[in-house]
Length: 140
Image (tube, rainbow, N blue to C red; front, side, top):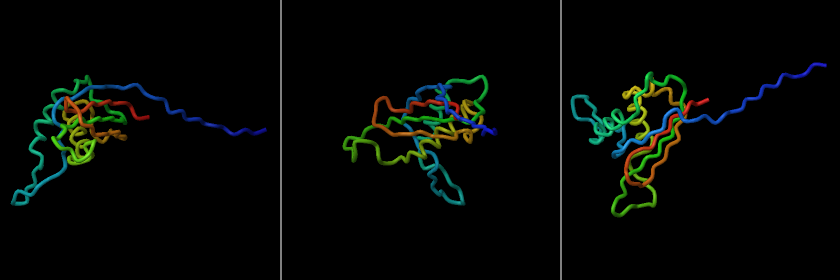
């Protein structure tokens, strides 16, 4: 009697490789403005300070992570005096906040390349202190 080979893939929940908080005001990356002579610059004036916060706060790694990873990012944004909504459903865009974090993690030497991020789980919240809580896990 011939039986079928059955392969079962069980996705195991991985433990975080790294978990940390970066204090500061999250700033987007990706929106550019034209300043003349074909030059484009980042629109967010807060990006350099945010990038510095990421690169100086991210925990140093003996070697940058060089496997597919899932990054969970919970952004805590400053609450305006008169918010339009109960959650920060206004600028900056969540995808541009993620872009700044991905590039910052690469520049900090935490990850080999931000292309290793195969899954993002991201959210924006009003909260104090402002910043981003990051969890990095191997994406299996």
